Amino acid sequence: MTQAVTAPAVQADPIGRWEGALNVGGTALPLVLRVERGPDGPVTVLDSPAQNARGMPVTDLTVTGGVVRFRVPLVRGGFEGAVSADGGTWTGAWSQGGGSLPLILTRADPAVAAPAGPNRPQTPQPPFPYAAQDVTFRNNGDGITLAGTLTLPQGPGPFPAVVLLTGSGAQDRDETILDHRPFAVWADTLTRRGIAVLRYDDRGVGGSGGGSLDETTADFAGDAAAAVDLLRARPEIDPARIGLIGHSEGGTAALIATSAGVPVAFVVLIAGPAVSGAEIVTEQAAGLTAAGGGSPEQVEDARRMQGALMAAVVTNRDDGEAAARAAEAVLSAAGQSPDQIRSALPVLSSGWYRAVVAYDPGPALTGLRVPLLAVYGTRDLTVPADQSREVLARLKPDADIVVLPGLNHLMQTATTGLPGEYGMIEETLAPVALATVTDWVVKVTAP
Image 1 (cartoon, rainbow, N blue to C red):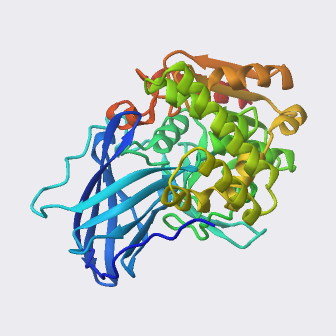
Image 2 (spheres, rainbow, N blue to C red):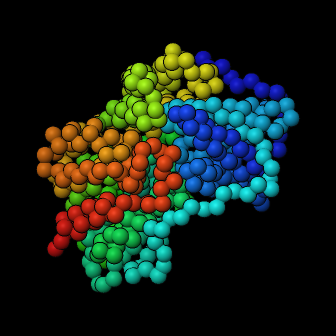
Image 3 (spheres, helix red, strand yellow):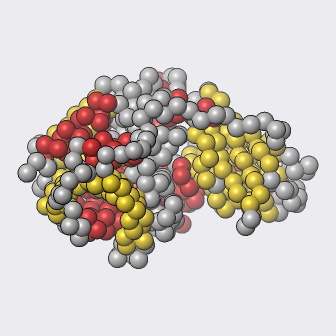
């Protein structure tokens, strides 16, 4: 069993501004938690100034029995720590994506202003030469209602159409991250080229229902199927020319939906894995360690530890409690503290994470009978291009596979590919990525 967090039995008012920093690969990543009074209780957001990320919604903030906890659904992260005797310091751990790092948050001077917003020149601005409509639709599998935006080109139609599917983490319909709005850019670019676009809030975000760590990629594939149903019922849309465009985990959802018989004419994977989630996450750990300046020995240690952790989770894919016990043993042997382990286990043992790392897209790719475009970046440290490209070419020889030099996981022109760089880049999407995908979609949907 993990050890419980011990702390003085103090109840501290969380209202105010709290500052701290994560040590990521030897680099300090400042974090700012802003807790303000609202009509129905505290309103809390998290800023990551170095990444130019502001206003990430924080949920489930509690200060009970000298322990403070909160979650950040957008990045599937969270914090748990002990409150100091004077109530001015929270000492604990930040957990995210199966890992955790020590974090100390200290009450700051409330007069210090938050950083100004970054420049995002590609974010579309009105007036637009197309129509945009708010829509809602229902996943009949579990009754969840999703809310989104449908953009329609000028003219009578019927138009070809795409559904945009976001990557990991609960995100809004624009896939907003670090003040970038890539799905708004994709929708604007495609719609100007005559392609209708449906994008929607993920579960638990904006106008969409649901939102728990036990909802899996298969559930998200069901949402995609419901989105296709909505488009097929619209008179402005040609039902024979509807496709799915998935970013990262969204690509996996597209493959699951298509293999389940959702009637689509094409699929586009943007940094979409062609190997299992366990293989992806293991290589992620090694790649991030190397890019952060780790020695060859440290890279291999990261690969070995992450591989063991993935094996523990995959072996117990159908049993969350067993997965937690097995993962705890691996993390303990790796030297992580009880608090770090306690913070990591809820994600590692969740239904979502177990399904992600256990899923192998191979059968879906082999059975895919519609045109497929897969786009990767050479500086993607999350879904490495070399790892998926060779496998995909073997599983689906007729796929169009494009590897774009210098692009990261978000399809930005990058220097290192490290996630800490995402928010520092003004570019939301590299023009070559926009052109590659849009030109291909226009081609395959031509009458």
